[in-house]
Image 1 (cartoon, chains in turn green, purple, blue, brown):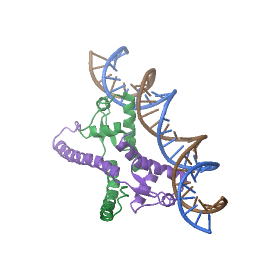
Image 2 (cartoon, rainbow over the protein chains, first blue to last red; image 1 turned 90 degrees about the vertical axis):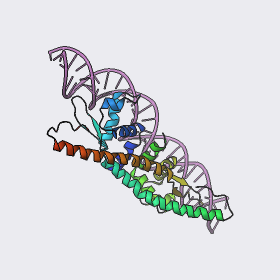
Image 3 (tube, each protein chain N blue to C red; image 1 turned 30 degrees about the horizontal axis):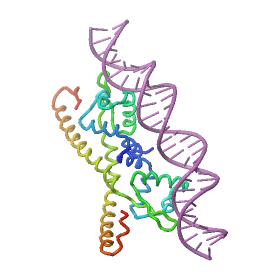
Image 4 (tube, rainbow over the protein chains, first blue to last red; image 1 turned 90 degrees about the horizontal axis):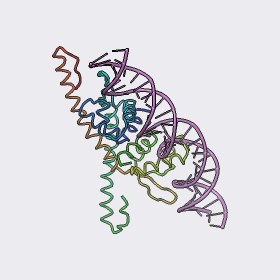
Length: 114
Length: 114
DNA sequence: TTGCAATATAGCCACTTAGGTATATATCCA
DNA sequence: TGGATATATACCTAAGTGGCTATATTGCAA
């Protein structure tokens, strides 16, 4: 699995996205991260391991705590992938708009298939 | 599974990302999409079904062909999610820079706790 | 040292996924 | 009608995932 694979796979779970969102407020311990969820602590630890393996978070050491913090690099790479294609999609959209305009100008309203 | 879940899950596979990339050049049939891959046609059809269920592509009909085309909406939503947090991450980076500067100016390097 | 608090690991289960092959369906063409 | 082409479906398998409980580990504090 390459970096984009693991990044998108990690982002495909709502618990993990919520954890990442929480970490934008700053470092947090496992207990703090687990608190909002109706889920056992080991399950949260497993999610954190997925995020760590994807390079999306890193862990520190503070006594018994292993605080988590965001790592932005893989997220930036995922954003770049999407952004690169978004520009092309936007181009397609403009072409689509032109096509729809042409169709509306014609008589056949059947293909509002979008 | 909500929209973001299925979108990111669909994006986590390199074959599917390559298919989406190919589709930025315009519609393509299943055979055309399968051609670059050392993979059976049914496997490609399965990937296309994943993409279709995620709303990332839609299918038409052209004789025996079922041409695929990109649907941008879910990709736009995924981009929005990443962009929203990217701004915060960038903000954190700036704050971190400031914090590191302050710490270097002081004498106690112990509390890099954010 | 004893014990508590925070976290990780192990093992279990149900479900999903990504690949394969074989076969069915659908559409065109002769 | 019959054959060829394009695609989908059914079924199999191996591996991965997400949840759980129980237990181990680690570090502090009395």
